[in-house]
Length: 358
Image (cartoon, rainbow, N blue to C red; front, side, top):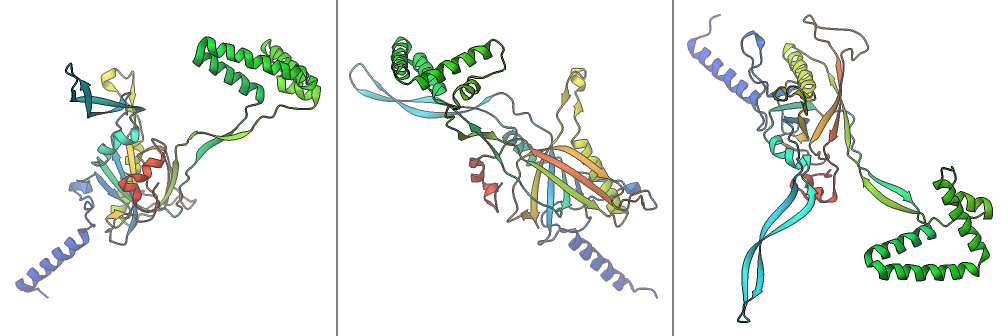
C-alpha cells in the first residue's frame, strides 16, 4: 500500500529525530561516519562496542598524543621582589628587582605532555575491563651503621667542614677512644681484629672485619639496623579487553583500534636525521569515565607509555571467523606504564581530588 505524501514526510521527520537522538553521546564526539566503500571519514574517534554512551555508562577513555620530551631545563620561577637599600643620606629606598627561584628540579614528562593530551590526535573508547586494580608502592630498605663506621663518618665530616680545627678535634676524640680501649682488652682485641680484616679485604681477601670479629670473639658490632626510605617507583597497569564483534561496523572498529594502538606504541624513524635516531612513540592519557564526566570513585592516571600489546585472535581457544575473516572472539592485553612517579603533592591537583585520587 502506498504511503500518502503527508505520511512520508512524517515518517522521514520521525526517522531523522530518532537518528539524532541516537547520535547524542553526552558531549563526546559522534561515532565515525562512513564514506564510499565503507571507509571511515573520521578516524580520530574509535569505540567498542559501537553504541551510544549514556549518563550511566562506565567506560575507559584513551587519549593519544605525540610525545613531548621533558628536556634538560630546570623549572625556574621569576618573580618581582622588594629590595631595601640605604642611600648616602641615610634614608632607606625600596627598589623592585627580579628574583629567580631555582627549584633545582627538571621538568617532568607528565607535566610537559599534559598540554598536548588535552587536545589528543585520537581518542579510543573501550568498556571498563572486568579486572581493575592499582598498586602504589615506594622503596624502603634495611640499613646499618655500626659504632666504628659512625665514628669515622663523624670525624671525616668534621675535618671536611672545619679544616684544621676539625682534624685536631678528631685526633682528640681518637685519643679518648684509645684510652677507653686500653682499659677494655675485649674492645681492643675486637678493634684490632676488625682493622686487620679490613686490611686483608683491601689486599683482595674475601673476608670482612665483622666476620673476623665474630670468629675471634663470638660477637658482632651492633649494626643499629634501621629501615630507611630509598626512593619511589613508577606504576604499571595491565588491562585485558574481550572483543565479540556483532556486525561489520563493530568488526571494522575493532580492527582499527588494534591497529591504532600498535602504531601509536611503535617508535618512528627520524628521516631528517638520516635514520641515525629514532623518535619516541606516542603518549597516552587514560581516564575512567561515567557518562560525560570522570568516574567519581576509580583512580586517576598520570600520562603513560604503552609498553606492550598482546592480541589473541582465538579468544575461545579455537579458530572461528565471520564470512569476511574477522575472528568471532579476540582478547587484547595492554600494559601501560606512567611517565613519572606519583608524589604527595599530586593529590592536590584538581583532577586528582575526585574519587580515590591516584
